[in-house]
Image (cartoon, rainbow, N blue to C red):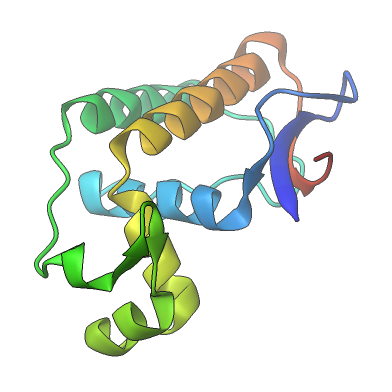
Length: 140
């Protein structure tokens, strides 16, 4: 099921629909790149502050300059182009398959750039217009 960030006040979407794994990968990458300022997407309606907007802006530029690297060689986990054996990777990383999927997506810089830009625009919309936004299940 895809998720998107919705403006509560305007009852409209502010981002593309993306898998929850993609949104969680963005949060995980934010943890990694800004450990002192953990960012979370709003699971309840939220009005963002100036400081939070600034932090999301910082994250966007950190992701832009980010050079993905993995401590393990992922080549052996690919079954086909863009198809990763998540069970095998999860076993190698000693995590659950869902966490392995988040790990793989967090290494996909173009995907993370797109998700970060959309999230930032939603956060800016919330701050500038004083509208509440929320991450919701939704449209395909």
